[in-house]
Image (cartoon, rainbow over all chains, first blue to last red; front, side):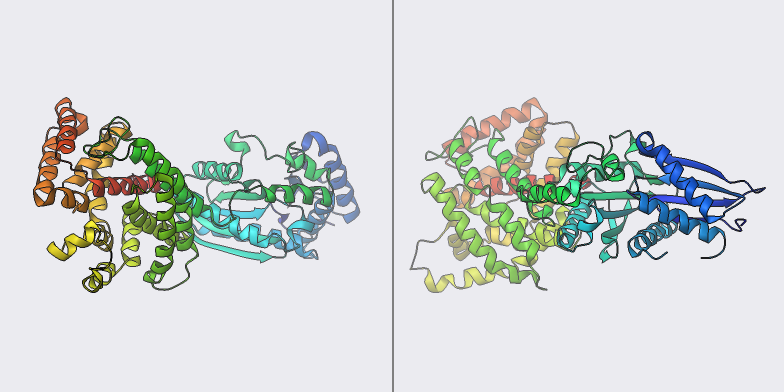
Length: 90
Length: 459
């Protein structure tokens, strides 16, 4: 499903993550990850994000993850909410 | 979203952004939260500590010269939070917040985030400061949080250990700050020299029965007292400041007993216990209302606390004058209508705010040392203070000698000139020979130093 609007979920507070989704040309998604614990958890954050994006059916969107040390469950919840919002469902 | 904790956090983030967007340039939004994992943060056990920490943080920013507006504290689904607007350069304010987080005994539990409409978030990293440390192991906290390195029980044990360390009651940071400032002022006044006619480290002045060590012993005995006066003011909930006076009097009587037992019965600081005690209480009361401390506000609140004291104290004298021996102040009120320190306090310490403090600060501004600026402040006070110590020993003639000599030394440039210094040295000899001790001015010098140190922003 194509992203239809700009959307965000979360915050830049400590232990949280801000996920923003922006509609882009074509059907492909792009993902950028920035984290204060990138060295330790950057790979894990990326794979969780890819997994959530894939299972959501999102297409044609730029997803940006700005992590401030969030737990994995928080990251998942923020990603799901941002995508829902970008798809115009929430 | 259906997670209330995450919803609440996102909601706070959006409120912060909305608030930052509406503030004028030069203002930031400060958001305060507890740096604890959700199971501890949400349990309610730390809500009161959080509220106290937030109040202490607001006070800290004020004392660093950053005005705070509309502070609000609430416990929401994400736990306790505080929000307020702060005026000042974003980076400078953030540094003051970090100073609090690192310096307050419970500061490691506080998380203060700053945001302004121009730069967005100002974090430790952007200032080149090291990251926060984990409460349990001291490693960068974000790593332990993201990796769930420590269980809730382990964090709880660390927090309990932190809270068991003495460091004052959270929320009463102003009280300990006021107490510390008063202790400093008393000690600074004691060692300032030369103080004509008074005890200083090099001279006993016009006193045969005491020396500098007597004053240091008394200062040490009184060290815990100032904080108690400040706490009485801080916790006073009444509408009329005068309602605080009876409990201050009780505290003052206890303090006098401590002083006399430390000095072997010599009166070193009785007058100061009265005036500085009132001002500590006044400062505490003002701080509890979130009003920035300034010398004028502090002095005029002190006046409100003692309102009517001169009339009340002296009205009863005529009836009981034949009972106990009268103090110098009481005798001169009866004979000459001199109101002494009571009148000074009741009028809002005009000698201090109008003469002593401007003199001290102008000498400091000229580059004089604190010691020399204090001596200049003392000379200035001598020219205006109605000093019952002088009146009781030397009468009106003694008062004239003190005032004329102080004016003369100041006209020569005070401690800022060679001639002025020489005049001060000669004053010491003269006052000692004439048995003149300007103890009232000395007390008000300590008060002057107290107000100077308590309100650095306006200096």
